[in-house]
Amino acid sequence: MDISAPPSKRARKSPQLDEDITGIRAILSDEFDEDIALIKAHSCQLETKQQLQAVIQELSQKLPHFQHLKRVQDRSVLICPSSEIGVTESLEQHLEQFAFSEHVLRALCQGVRVVEVPERMPRLRVQYEKTLKHWPCKFHPNHYSESLRNGSNFSSAQRAFHKRMGQLLVRLSQDVNANRPVGICVDPRLSSIVSIAGTGEVCKPHEHCCMMLVDFVARSQEGGATQTEVVFTEDSKEETTLRGIPKAYYDYLMSNADYKNLTFGAEKSRECKEVNVVQGADNLAKFGPYLCTGYDVYLLQEPCLMCSMALVHSRAKRVFFVKNSDNGALATRFQLHSVRELNHHYEVFQFTTEENEDLT
Image (cartoon, one colour):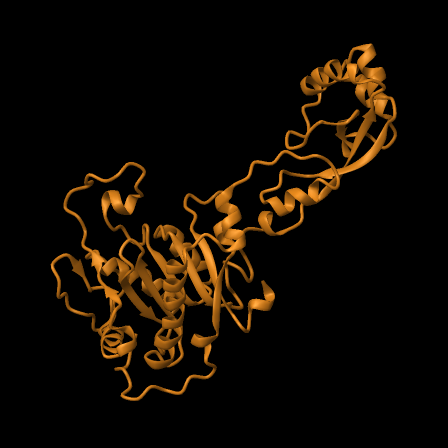
């Protein structure tokens, strides 16, 4: 991969995307964003509230449905999903096979009607408020999920730093990497740039920007598997290492007055396995760097499925990207980070611009 030396004169930006970044939004799974589907259910109307105890006791034992709903609304009681009742059988015939006591069976067959109820428990308050129009639903507020949805999860200082990294992606792509994709990895504990990588002029499938970034992070930990002609920055401090930062990017940033206050360097690999840290600290604080564990990854382009899985395997903490990709696996075509079966999950955020904020 060939990275040319920084140009002596900054190229004209087109478009002025670094100035267009307006904010950050979390890319949440569909269960947060979509309206909750409704299903049909059979309900009955009890004659008196005194019947409730006996009816609910037997229902919870013999038809333990609707764990996410309140079974009773006034004197109306949810019995079972309508889909469980055969086309040719009545509700009474369906209930007889569960051996209800005679007085409960009689109560369940009074004032029968079909209602629409939420299929699952809401994850956000806005979903919960919509479900109340149909049937009372159980809801356990998650304040962090709410903050992701409304954008209050970052402090103003954190938001400013993330936005600056998004702007920096665009500058590095335009001024150093011939408008090709660029990625930055940051240790959020120190707001320090660990590694920078960009797609080369000739890009093999395993040399996507994100793949190279992970490999350059490994270089900062005395690893790395990719054979490359890129010249890397030499270490200047004993406490941190610059081994993961190509010299072309580092020289450009050090020569630009706008970036004089940036912090560079990754924590060096520790000889001991664990140090004394506060209770509840994450693995990065406990054991030191291991690939992208605890790191934030900033990408100009939404990663493909291969690159998104590489970020899973490298244990990234958060992933930020600017532009959607036709084959993007975090928002455009798929949401890999929402697959529950994976053994690691990172949070995903997209920088909003004048071009894409109407899509939020």
